[in-house]
Length: 68
View 1: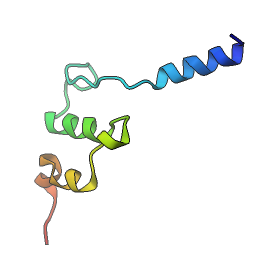
View 2: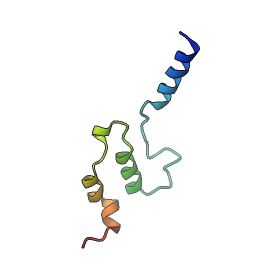
View 3: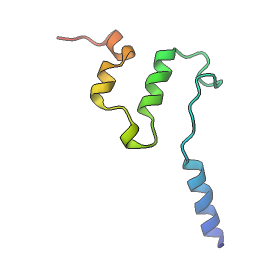
View 4: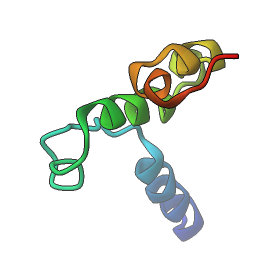
């Protein structure tokens, strides 16, 4: 395998989806609803990603959204 191919493979490996775990140190002091919203918005697979309608109905967004 060439050096370029090895670099490409390592870059692709870095892009593999990671599991967002709320017990992770990054999320331990964050609101659970916020972490839930992030997980749903940042899905690697677009077909699994939250839609705008789902976003607007999420309990965190509903808590501060003004309906006219």
